[in-house]
Amino acid sequence: MPQGLNRLATVIAQGKPKDTSWDEWKNQSREALEELFGTRFHSTHLKDRKKMIRVAPIRDEDGIAFAGLLPEESAESGPYGGMSLVWFPITTEGGEGKSLLTFVCGTQGLAPDEDILGRPGHARHVQALGRALAPVVESKIWTKPDPANIRASLPETAKERFAEFEGVFKKYGSLIYAMAEVPSDPEKAKKVVSGFLDFYASERKWRVLKGASDEVESNRKALQKEIFPQVEESDVEALLFDRRFVILQGPPGTGKTRMARGMLEKRFKGQGKIVQFHPGVTYETFVAGIAPETGAGSLAFSVRPGWLAEAIKEAREKPERDYLFVLDEINRADLSRVLGEAILLFEPREIAEGNAPSAVLPQPLPDGTKSLSIPKNFYVLGTMNTADRSIAILDWAVRRRFAFVDLWPSSKVVSDQPKAVAEVAAKAFEALQGLFVQFAPKDALVLLPGHAMFLADSLESLQKRLRHELVPLLREYLLEGRLGGCESEILAYLDWLESNLLSDAEPA
Image (cartoon, rainbow, N blue to C red):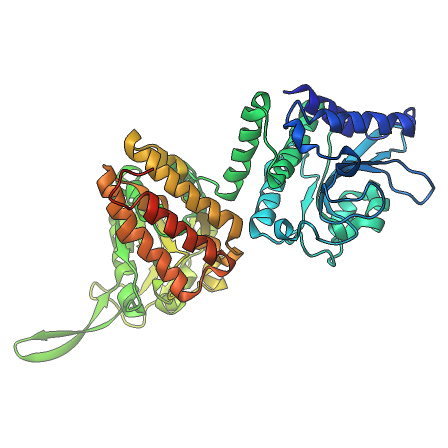
C-alpha cells in the first residue's frame, strides 16, 4: 500500500491523543494530506494546497477541530461549500484519540458541487460504501439517503451510536452525509480511509498513479458489488430450504427463470412443475374451481383441481422426495385474489414443525379431497420481473410469507463469452450499466436491461440482439417516460451504440 495512504490512515486513526499538541496534530495532518499527491494521485490535482487542504485545530472552547480535502474553489479560510472529505479528531476520557471520518457539505451549501451531490449515483455509491465498510468498522458507520438534503437533521439513533462526537453533531450534524468511526487497528483503518478517499477522488476525477491503481480498482469493484450484489444458485437453494417460499426478483434478462429451471432439474431431479402466471389466471385456475365440460352436444360443469392442488397431490405421492413448484412471472396476476383463502397455507414455520394449516375448498375435488395443506417436502420458487409496471404489486399478506432475492445483471456473465464477442458486449453492457448507476432515479434502476441481452455466439448475432432487443426496450422506456433524469444519457448511449456497434463497419 502506498506510503501516502499509510501515513494518512495512521494520522486519522490516532485522532488527537492527550500527549499530542494541536500544532503537532496540524503538521502531521497537513503533511499526510499533501503526500497523497505524488504517491496515490497525480500531483497536478493539488492545484492550490492552501484552498484544497484545510487543517483547523481547536482555537477556543467551543471550536471543533477538523482536517480534510475541500473543493479547489474554496477560500483559504472561513466558510466553504460543496463536497468535502473531512475527519474530526477527539481526545477520549482515557487520554487516547479517535476520529470520525466523514463526507460533509460545507456550511455555504451545495455549490460548487451541486451536480455531484444531487446525482443519484453519488448517493448510491455512498450507501454502497457504507455496506462495504460495515463489517470493518463493526457497523460504526452511517450514510444519509440524500446527500443534498442539508436540512435533514442527523437521526437520534445515529447520534447515540457515535455519542463521543456529540460536539461535532451540534455544529455540523445536518451537513454530514456519511460517517465512520475509524478503527485503531492499522489494517482496518487503511481500509476505511482508502474506501472514503478513493471514492472522493473518483468523484473529483483525479488520476490515479500506477502504484495505487490495483487497490483503487479493488475499492471500485467493492462498491459495484454492493450496488449489484451477485447471488449464486447455492445461496438461493439454502434460502429455499430455510424459508420454503422464495421469490427471485429483478430486471428482465437476469436469469431468474433459468435459475429456477436449473434448480428443478438439478437439485430436485425433475420432481416438480413450472406454471406460467398471466393476467387471466384466477382462483379456479390456481387452486380449484368449477369448469365447463362439453360432450355429446351438451354443456356440463365439474370441479377441477387447479395447479396448486395438482402440485400438492404430486408431492404427497412421493413424500420421500423434495418437490419444487415454480411460479414463473408470479406478479403478472393478482396473487391475493388468485390464492384466496389458500394464502393461509403458506406458513413456512408451521409446515416445518408438522403443524401445516389447512384450507377448506369451496367444493370437494373429484378424488374426494375437501381441504388442502402443504406437505413438508413441498417448496415454492417464484420469479418476478421488477421492470414490468403493468403487473400487480404484491400486497403485505403475500410478501410476509415469502423471502425475496434480488437478481441483478452480471458483468461476469457478459465477459465469460468467446473473446471476440465478450470485448464488444462488455463495452456496451458496462457503458449502459454505468449510466443507470449514475443517473437513474431509484425507481428506474430496476429497469436496467439484463445480461441476457448482451449474450451471443458471434458478433453478427450480438449486433442483431442489440438492435432488435436492447434498442427497442430502451426506446420503449423513453416513450413511456420511465427514466427520469437519465433520459438524455440514454439517448446519447443509443447514438453511440448506433455509430460504434450497430453500423456495418467493424465495431470500434
